Amino acid sequence: MDLKDKGEVGKNSAFLNSFKYAFKGILTAFQEERNMRSHLLIGSVVLILCAFLNLASNEWLWVIFSIFLVIIMEVWNTVIENVVDLTTGEQYHPLAKKAKDMAAAAVLVTAGFAIIVAAIIILPKLWQILS
Image 1 (cartoon, rainbow, N blue to C red):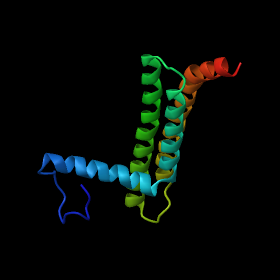
Image 2: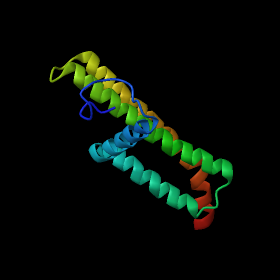
Image 3: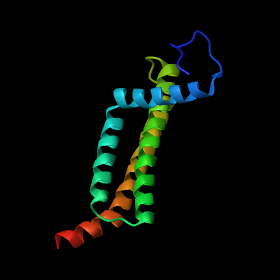
Image 4: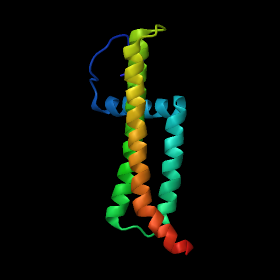
């Protein structure tokens, strides 16, 4: 729930409001986070490339899983950064820096995993086409 939408904090009374707020969160992440836009662009390019490579079902699952995992981690990174900023305000705190750095590291590790998956699945197929 967005605090600007209602004057009070609480549970959503309507089930459909949960979806409305979730989609608003996705839109906010896309609009405000440059890295989210980069991940979505790269993921889209990979999916378009994979459409031409005749992937097996299990290969599609790994590629899609990897892309979604990077996006999920980027959302969590943004959540952690926003909560840390909310609690620390404009004050520097070494634990706040640690939390933000570790959240960014989680995205980096996940992106590394996605690159490994792409290297295992996509590179051999590209190599066959190009050679």
